[in-house]
Length: 194
Image (cartoon, rainbow, N blue to C red; front, top):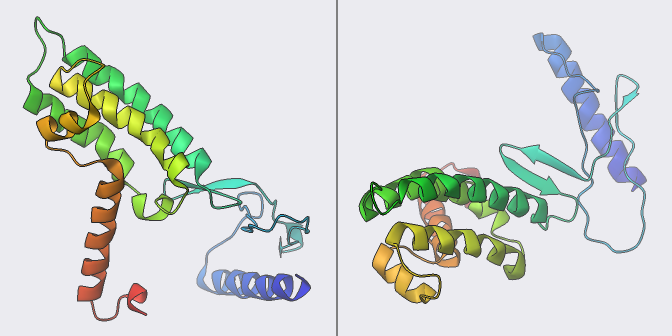
């Protein structure tokens, strides 16, 4: 751990020197450090400093809209995403009134634009978490499809997929990841090709 801490501190020092040279500043108060590790035994967190001010070590951090936790289980991100989707379901519930509500295609478009786009964002990253954690998003997906199609609560999920022309979320994540890999392989100098 001491060797890793020294290497990280050297990298941070070089980054601070580059920023000073090019007119940028890095604040230690606004910086955070996460120690990603899946080991069960207790080991110390790294002590990294910016200009002799320690960078605080946190258990989870939000980066580009995805919440990374210490164990890379992505449970906080999926719980946050589920809460966000449940709030957005209220829009569909209001628009799906029987007397003056929107039709199925309009509701599906709203669902794809508001809820499904937020589920798809970052799915290549958080898709590596456990299947039991990923299944927590399925309830929001299924209830949205029930609202859009006007189906009963007891209707089977497979028929909802057929009626609404939607894939299950695990197949949708695989499809998006495969499309990303094909796009990355079409660019010769893409970093993921190595």
